[in-house]
Image 1 (tube, rainbow, N blue to C red):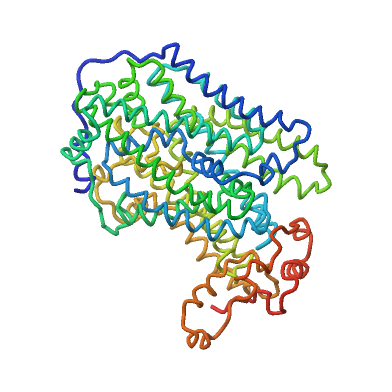
Image 2 (cartoon, rainbow, N blue to C red):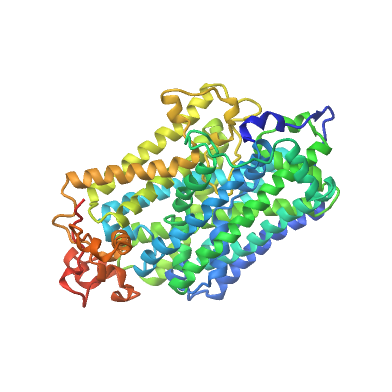
Length: 633
């Protein structure tokens, strides 16, 4: 059964009795405080352990000595925000289990970064992902990419901090600005002082807290309604269990194709080219460890998705047995899970505090990653190029100051978020909108040797324009249509995804919409196709401009910045077919043999050298044909 046809049946009856606002017990406060104290302690431990001896490499890349398991848990926690912890169960509760098929996209969404992006980034020995753009194109493209990333993260991190605090305040009466200030300052202190190693190990701790909090809800909730079998039976009876929806229409919000394949591009924008994730890959002690960490994320993400979906089903079964109040039935979607948890656990001291700790663990892991990655790109892409002679001690101190400054900026953005009202929909959507064009920019450089700097810059701008046109247009259209009612509150912060890139408009059930036509239909494109649509725009426009401006003619390309797609495809053909090909776009020998390149190159030499010197250094010892020639299309 389609989710949309049964959505109207998924609202349980409401009782007329208004419950009192649930209150935290002393035990709950202690459990919540322990989360903050232990997170701060982990950060301070790593800070004082190397006090006076910390280098920029230790702060930014944990001295490139991390193992695959902590890196994998940190990779998963980075985009498992509190907004997602609240959003996924609400999505399942309201629209059914169709969203569960998002798990199908995780395989390709993590396999491709492991075998394409990680080898290139790791072998170039980068610190900032945007260094790649300078090595492949030029400094102007690097600056454009860095500025886009900073804009993306600064807008987003204030909302991630403010949203769960507002939801918690509305449901439990927990002081709004005290939670915002405490969370922001604790995160800023341990991130600034401890660097990436502190961030990764606190992510590991916070991941365990998130699992414990969610498992507590599933265990207690399923026990109260008669077990998981009863939960599944109730969900099936009310049409909540969805079959595979094979409708290929990209304008339908959730279908199998949209979730399984559109979601791949969303995953690539997160796990392939986002600085917060690339930094973790580069902190691994070996390239193999980095690839294994990416593989390890796959079962972890599947487990997280299953747990979140089960909470939604348990919540539905619970409210069939114990109908919610009128106040709760009219609550914003982001508050549904919190109301449920406070109802469910109110007689069990400590468990409500554990779930709130779980909620804020999601925020801490996301925000700390944002602080650290923003400090890194600011240092590497703006300060070091202008002040190359800066001492290591001063650079380390400046890196700490930058991380703490971004923490203060996050608090400022949280305050602005409180003043924006409905504009928050756009602010929260920006993260997803910008991820697609950045993915397209990196793909343009890695897969198309003929792409040049003018094509990269114009393509990125075209992708951003398209992203904001479609994304903001869809929000404005829905607001004008009067769809933002009490049931679909425009100031809600819910995000129906275990990732944090989903625009707010996804909360609108397609069953509530009349069939759009013309430009309105264009604006109804499923959010999961945003990354694919925007990255494709960057690539197409970038290639057209590159060809119109002469491609790479007159420029020498560093072969280490190219992923050899064509040789790998040609190698699958019979020998007789290979000999008949009219051109050879790459030098197969150079690009398919990683041993041709030293694992650690001095990128400072690369960045300060001419194109010919770069080619000479990167291709030393290879034949004259090792230089990548312009591709014949």
